[in-house]
Length: 506
Image (cartoon, rainbow, N blue to C red; front, side, top):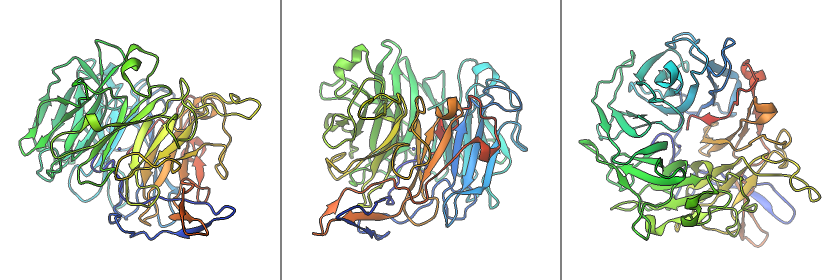
């Protein structure tokens, strides 16, 4: 998840009627829920669409040229009949698919030309030997078509690489600005709106990092409630390989301010992670920062609470600055969180925000692609099969023991079977594909079928579970109704080692 990318406020609550309980419909306009708002709607029909990346995909025989698959939403959910595939060999997309380009290395969305349609912004991190490029595929009433190059990198920039792409209005002028990274650590804000030829009408400003850092992920949101979008980055310090910090830049009418760190109780930079999302989890009017950290087994583990198996950190926003001292840390050893923290689980791989239990608070949807699954007699029968966990948000953060949920390919009604190396949960996505005001969830398993990769789509039923005595019970968040999976057979793409589902346009 960016202002248009992350921070779903609409409800997703899926429940199965089980013995002793009944499933009742939750009102879409329940108290505290925000009005329905479609995201990633490329054709402007009110339904969120799904764009999924395969940057390692082969195009016209060229390995790792990369491509992006798109399915469009409808009243009945995602429609497989409306699929599209884009690469640099597609009509209207500048350039030519070449080995190693990695088209789709990063994806995000924004209405860059202010025509009322969401555009798909694509990173091409391997272009020109690693200089990188950022391109756009324009949205319109008939869907995505045509494109332009927005920016090209210099040697070793890796412009548009994974985690190096975002969009948001960081100067409050009403136009979406493009956020990229050069030298792998300096933030660049290019002012919108953009012309159909890809030229920016605003200024291009480089905000240098005073540390020798490496940006791992970007997201945006209004951290201090002043109405202007701020930028947040998960970073890695090169002085210590596994040092993770969280940086942010305030958005102002004059553009972005200098780099600032989130600090912990000791006054040092709070240990961060590899990916993040921004959104108002506790509904206090200030966007919070949610960080997933999967790296473990290094020296910094000693300063990282609940590092084992990966963790998710919630950092509340305030009117002053993100409150690192009040952060909450969650891993699979927390009470009520499904599973057990084990080395290599990758808990916290990709984090997305959505109200998944219909209570009006944003919850955290996160992948655990290193999760081992098995049987009572062989608990490690399928190493790295993967899972997805939903952490319930509340007014006091990521609390609520017993309200968290997990889904795997072995869950009831989920197509397929968990297998070694599937990496189910390698990426996740939330979006209201059927326009019912409830967010639906897509899950990527880039390791499926020997690295071909596949995608699972879970539709929200908008229900919650109540006991006979009227006491709310934890919902089964991702249920079987409307669930389907798709891959290269549908898209008509080359499957071998494509790793479809490596990322989504969130």
